[in-house]
Length: 347
Image (cartoon, rainbow, N blue to C red; front, side):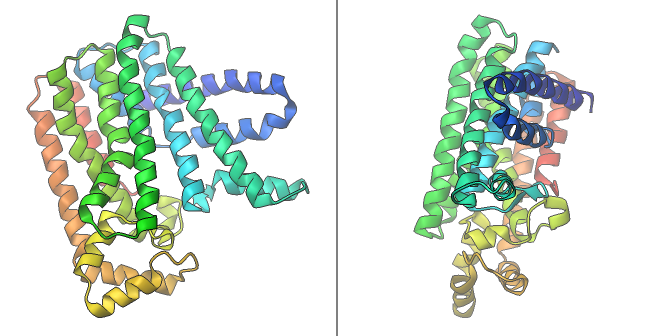
């Protein structure tokens, strides 16, 4: 809990400084400042936590510079979420209006000219881009030694490339409407898994000066865990409780997400079930009753139990990998706990 509070303070301090600069450009930017502050004050902080404890596992010591550096990953995450909501046409995020809806509402409230939805989408894209810039700035101003930054930058660059590539693969897969489990797993790996777990682990470990075998060990821990994290997210996107997930039930079904869960359901469906899937999957006006029809098909085909099995197997593989490591015992214990929290979460 104390570390999360330090991450919160680091983020707030950075945002406060940046808001001053935005204000100097013009008072019209106040809504951008307010939206960013609200968006960044929520979240599990999984990426900074994985990075921090990987660093400590490799013999790193607690410092303000380390906390600032790992906290910068939250801005990268914010960029991904804001842009993801635009691409998916999501109405809500964490129980509140998605950023593009927030600015569309502002447009209507202020009786501005033009189309409110276009204004909202444009504002969200720009705010997401701003978060990406701020991620770089917070990392560069974190206080890490320039030698450390030199060896860290390639890892950070790779993380961002993989994230953007994964997002495109996700968009493409929906357009192709495939039912390949293998392709869906690749999306889970690159869209979320690698940038949520594996690369943050490498990020923190490289700051501590970890060697190649140690980075490979973190990959054996992080890759299956990252995929399991995304698979859990896919299940919540279909079966999650809106009061807990902050998003309407069945949103992934309305968006026609080509997840591993859906791929298994499509591949196992009977002729009658296939007709229902083709009829309802990807319908933006899907009713609660239609959502329930698809949920039952996913259960009845065994797709849900199969994905739950994959999650548990991946979690076991991940914990076995980190348990075999000759690393700091306290840090390893925390990483095990984080693995369980990431795969059995309700948020």
